[in-house]
Length: 153
Image (tube, rainbow, N blue to C red; front, side):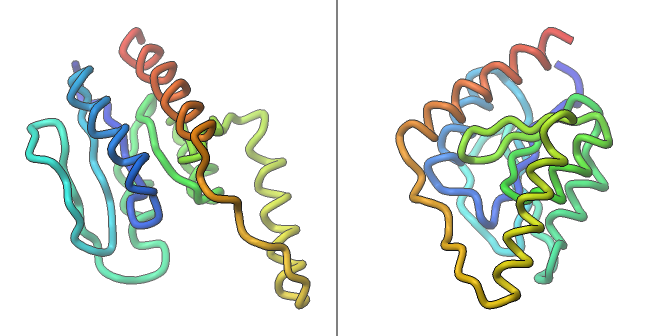
Protein backbone atom coordinates (compact mmCIF):
# COMPACT_ATOMS: atom_id res chain seq x y z
CA UNK A 1 0.00 0.00 0.00
CA UNK A 2 1.37 3.42 -0.87
CA UNK A 3 0.70 6.78 0.78
CA UNK A 4 -2.97 7.02 -0.14
CA UNK A 5 -5.18 7.58 2.84
CA UNK A 6 -8.56 8.41 4.27
CA UNK A 7 -8.92 11.91 5.73
CA UNK A 8 -11.75 12.66 8.15
CA UNK A 9 -13.20 16.10 8.86
CA UNK A 10 -13.55 14.77 12.39
CA UNK A 11 -15.09 17.50 14.54
CA UNK A 12 -18.60 16.94 13.18
CA UNK A 13 -18.24 13.29 12.18
CA UNK A 14 -20.57 11.03 14.18
CA UNK A 15 -18.90 8.53 16.52
CA UNK A 16 -20.66 5.60 14.83
CA UNK A 17 -19.10 6.63 11.49
CA UNK A 18 -15.66 7.01 13.09
CA UNK A 19 -16.01 3.48 14.47
CA UNK A 20 -16.80 2.14 10.98
CA UNK A 21 -13.69 3.95 9.71
CA UNK A 22 -11.49 2.60 12.51
CA UNK A 23 -12.53 -0.96 11.67
CA UNK A 24 -12.07 -0.43 7.93
CA UNK A 25 -8.57 1.03 8.34
CA UNK A 26 -7.52 -1.96 10.43
CA UNK A 27 -9.20 -4.46 8.10
CA UNK A 28 -7.61 -3.25 4.86
CA UNK A 29 -4.43 -1.63 6.22
CA UNK A 30 -5.26 1.83 4.94
CA UNK A 31 -3.97 4.96 6.67
CA UNK A 32 -6.75 6.92 8.37
CA UNK A 33 -6.13 10.46 9.60
CA UNK A 34 -8.68 12.39 11.62
CA UNK A 35 -8.30 16.17 11.49
CA UNK A 36 -9.97 18.10 14.30
CA UNK A 37 -9.90 21.32 16.33
CA UNK A 38 -9.97 19.34 19.57
CA UNK A 39 -8.39 16.27 21.09
CA UNK A 40 -10.43 13.10 20.59
CA UNK A 41 -10.20 9.38 21.11
CA UNK A 42 -8.55 7.25 18.47
CA UNK A 43 -7.63 3.60 18.92
CA UNK A 44 -3.96 2.72 19.21
CA UNK A 45 -2.99 1.59 15.71
CA UNK A 46 -0.23 2.17 13.20
CA UNK A 47 -3.00 2.87 10.66
CA UNK A 48 -4.84 5.61 12.60
CA UNK A 49 -3.63 9.11 13.50
CA UNK A 50 -5.08 12.41 14.69
CA UNK A 51 -3.97 15.84 13.58
CA UNK A 52 -5.17 18.53 15.95
CA UNK A 53 -5.35 21.95 14.31
CA UNK A 54 -5.82 25.37 15.88
CA UNK A 55 -9.36 26.37 16.81
CA UNK A 56 -11.03 28.42 14.14
CA UNK A 57 -13.36 28.37 11.21
CA UNK A 58 -12.16 26.05 8.38
CA UNK A 59 -8.82 25.21 10.06
CA UNK A 60 -9.47 21.45 9.73
CA UNK A 61 -10.78 21.88 6.18
CA UNK A 62 -7.69 23.85 5.15
CA UNK A 63 -5.40 21.20 6.64
CA UNK A 64 -7.17 18.46 4.70
CA UNK A 65 -7.08 20.40 1.43
CA UNK A 66 -3.36 21.09 1.88
CA UNK A 67 -2.60 17.40 2.44
CA UNK A 68 -5.06 15.52 0.21
CA UNK A 69 -3.65 13.74 -2.84
CA UNK A 70 -5.36 12.24 -5.90
CA UNK A 71 -7.29 9.07 -5.02
CA UNK A 72 -7.34 9.89 -1.29
CA UNK A 73 -10.74 9.53 0.34
CA UNK A 74 -12.16 12.39 2.43
CA UNK A 75 -15.06 11.93 4.82
CA UNK A 76 -16.93 15.21 5.23
CA UNK A 77 -20.36 16.75 5.34
CA UNK A 78 -18.84 20.10 4.37
CA UNK A 79 -19.83 20.75 0.74
CA UNK A 80 -17.18 23.42 -0.03
CA UNK A 81 -14.50 21.03 1.30
CA UNK A 82 -15.88 18.23 -0.87
CA UNK A 83 -15.67 20.52 -3.92
CA UNK A 84 -11.99 21.21 -3.22
CA UNK A 85 -11.25 17.51 -2.67
CA UNK A 86 -12.85 16.58 -5.99
CA UNK A 87 -10.91 19.36 -7.74
CA UNK A 88 -7.69 17.80 -6.42
CA UNK A 89 -8.63 14.36 -7.74
CA UNK A 90 -9.74 12.89 -4.41
CA UNK A 91 -12.96 11.14 -3.47
CA UNK A 92 -15.49 12.71 -1.08
CA UNK A 93 -18.03 10.77 0.96
CA UNK A 94 -20.35 12.30 3.52
CA UNK A 95 -21.15 10.57 6.83
CA UNK A 96 -24.69 9.85 5.61
CA UNK A 97 -23.28 7.72 2.79
CA UNK A 98 -23.69 10.16 -0.10
CA UNK A 99 -20.77 9.84 -2.48
CA UNK A 100 -20.05 13.19 -4.08
CA UNK A 101 -18.92 13.30 -7.70
CA UNK A 102 -17.99 15.99 -10.17
CA UNK A 103 -21.37 15.41 -11.82
CA UNK A 104 -23.40 15.96 -8.64
CA UNK A 105 -21.41 18.32 -6.42
CA UNK A 106 -22.46 21.59 -8.11
CA UNK A 107 -26.14 20.80 -7.56
CA UNK A 108 -25.47 19.93 -3.92
CA UNK A 109 -23.52 23.18 -3.48
CA UNK A 110 -26.32 25.22 -5.08
CA UNK A 111 -28.90 23.64 -2.74
CA UNK A 112 -26.67 24.36 0.28
CA UNK A 113 -26.28 28.00 -0.79
CA UNK A 114 -30.04 28.30 -1.40
CA UNK A 115 -30.79 27.01 2.11
CA UNK A 116 -28.21 29.41 3.56
CA UNK A 117 -29.97 32.29 1.77
CA UNK A 118 -33.34 31.19 3.17
CA UNK A 119 -31.93 30.96 6.71
CA UNK A 120 -30.31 34.39 6.45
CA UNK A 121 -33.71 35.75 5.39
CA UNK A 122 -35.24 34.38 8.59
CA UNK A 123 -36.88 31.30 7.06
CA UNK A 124 -36.42 28.17 9.18
CA UNK A 125 -35.23 25.28 7.01
CA UNK A 126 -34.74 22.74 9.81
CA UNK A 127 -31.71 20.60 10.38
CA UNK A 128 -30.90 17.21 8.96
CA UNK A 129 -32.70 14.16 10.31
CA UNK A 130 -30.92 11.87 12.77
CA UNK A 131 -28.38 9.47 11.29
CA UNK A 132 -30.32 6.31 10.49
CA UNK A 133 -29.28 2.67 10.13
CA UNK A 134 -29.88 3.08 6.40
CA UNK A 135 -27.38 5.99 6.38
CA UNK A 136 -24.81 3.87 8.24
CA UNK A 137 -25.27 0.96 5.86
CA UNK A 138 -24.98 3.23 2.81
CA UNK A 139 -21.85 4.84 4.27
CA UNK A 140 -20.21 1.45 4.90
CA UNK A 141 -21.14 0.19 1.42
CA UNK A 142 -19.83 3.30 -0.37
CA UNK A 143 -16.68 3.29 1.76
CA UNK A 144 -16.03 -0.32 0.77
CA UNK A 145 -16.55 0.57 -2.92
CA UNK A 146 -14.09 3.46 -2.65
CA UNK A 147 -11.52 1.33 -0.83
CA UNK A 148 -11.74 -1.40 -3.46
CA UNK A 149 -11.46 1.16 -6.25
CA UNK A 150 -8.56 2.97 -4.59
CA UNK A 151 -6.66 -0.19 -3.65
CA UNK A 152 -7.08 -1.50 -7.20
CA UNK A 153 -5.74 1.64 -8.89
